[in-house]
Image (spheres, rainbow, N blue to C red):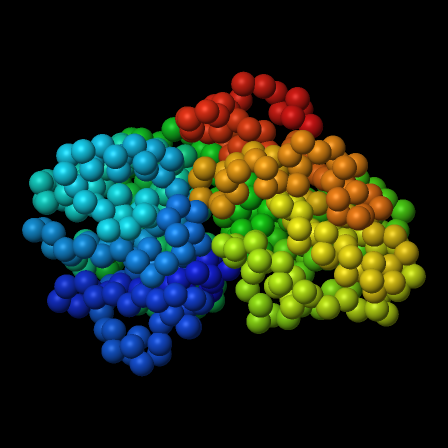
Length: 441
Ligand code: SF4
C-alpha cells in the first residue's frame, strides 16, 4: 500500500479473509493508519487494501476503506477508486425503498447494491454485472466476496487498473509499479468494462458487455500516477518527457536554467531541457517528508506545506533567468508561492511552463476539482494568470500536444476538465466531441 501512497493520504485500510472478512482501517498515511502489531495479527490467504483520497464523502474514519458488509451469502469487502456520477440519484432511490446508509461515500452505495444483489442471485459475477449496469461514473474496484477476490474497471476505463503475478499468486492494483516493487511481474491492464477474478492458478476474465470505448483520464499521466508506472500501454515517465519536449517546441523562452518543481515537474523538465538545449538543474530542494499538496483536502494545509516542502538553492537561481516547469496549474496558489520563493532567491526572471493545458472545468470522475471558480484559468487569459503568479511569462502545452505526447487518440482519453465536454452524461455539462479539439486551444 505504501507503493501507492501517492494516490491517497487521508486514510488507509486492509481487509483479509480468515474465516470471515476482517478489516483494519485508520486515518493518515498507511504506516500511521495501520500499526505493525495489528497488521502482524491480521492473517489471511486473500486480501484487498486501499489508500483514500476523497472526492465524494468527507475525510473521516467512517469513510475509510475497504468497506466491509455481512450478507446472507457471506462477507463482502470493497475498495474503490473513482467517483459515481449518479451516486446521489441511486442513494435517493434506494432510501425511498427503505435502505439506510451509514456514510456519505459513494463506495457505500456500490457495496450495498452488491450485497443486496448477491443475496438474491448467489452469484457474485452476475451481481457485479447487474450493479455495473446501474452505475455511471469512474470506478476501479477490488472486491472480496468471502475469500474470492475480484477486480473490475468501469466501462470507459477512466481510472487505471492492472493485474500481475506476485510471489504468492496474482494481484490487481491501480498502477504497475506495485509489481515492480514487490518483486512481481506486471501482466496487463484490465480492460474497460472487464471483471477479473484472481484465482490460485489463473486470472479469470469476464467481459460484462458494458464497455463503451475508452476515456482514460489524461491527468493520470500528467500528475497522478508515479512516473515509473505503465498505464494502458504508456510509461508515465516517457509521456511526461514527451510533454516537456512538446512544451519546449510550443512555448520556447530565452533563459539560463530549467528548474523543475519537484517531484511533479521533474520528468517534464527533462524533456524541456532535451529539446530547448537549456541546462537543467535542481534549484528547489524538497523535504520528502511532507505529503503531496494537491491531494490534501484543505487549502490551508496546502499553503503551509509549500513553504515547508521546498527550499531554493541560491547558487543555482541567483541572477539567472529561470524556466520553472510543473505538470499543471489548478488553483494557482502553490505556483504563485513557488514563483515568489524563486524570486526571493535572486532570480533575474521567472518563466513558468506547464505540462497540461489550462484546467477550467470541474472533474466528476475522481479528482477533487469541483467548482469552476477555484481554477486559476477561469475567466483569465494566460497573461492574466502570469500576472497572478507574478511570473515574467507563462506557457501551457496545447491540447493537441498533450494528446500526441500521451500516445492515445483524443477519443480514447477523458479531457473533460480541459474542454468542458465529458465522456459521460453529467447534469448541466456537455457530452464530449461536439467540437474539434483545436477549437479549445
Ligand atoms: S475531468 Fe480531467 S481529471 Fe477528471 S477524469 Fe477527466 S481528464 Fe481526468
